Image 1 (cartoon, rainbow, N blue to C red):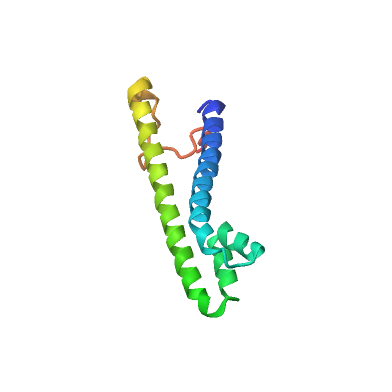
Image 2 (image 1 turned 90 degrees about the vertical axis):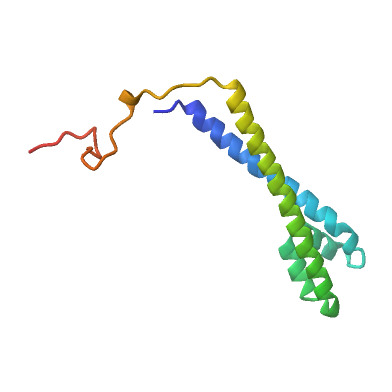
Amino acid sequence: MRPTGCDTTRQVGGALGVAVLGSVLHSIYSGRMTDHVTALPAQAADTVKDTIIGAAEIAQHLGPRAGALLDHAQRAFVHAMDVTLLVATGTAILGALVVAIWLPHRGVDMDAVPETGDDADPRPDVAVRG
């Protein structure tokens, strides 16, 4: 059984990871869209810069300019995803290096590992009655 501190660390790390990567994605996407929404009304421009779905919704009302807006929104989103994935990859590599260099090696005690074969009792806490 794991100590509860490990679960808490995992939960906090996951939440922070999603928040940081989401912020990177949104920042890069909205930065790329800023120059291409100057002709739109302020509320429509904010919707387009906020999400790619917002850009698709606004494009439905633009007529002939819709294709250019959608094309740029798609390119901005893919670029933002590329950068976000590079940040995630770099973070994972950095984490692996920290673990490999600074965390102590703990060998596995094979006597403490439960059997996983077909004949192992799947419910070791339950007494078998014959």
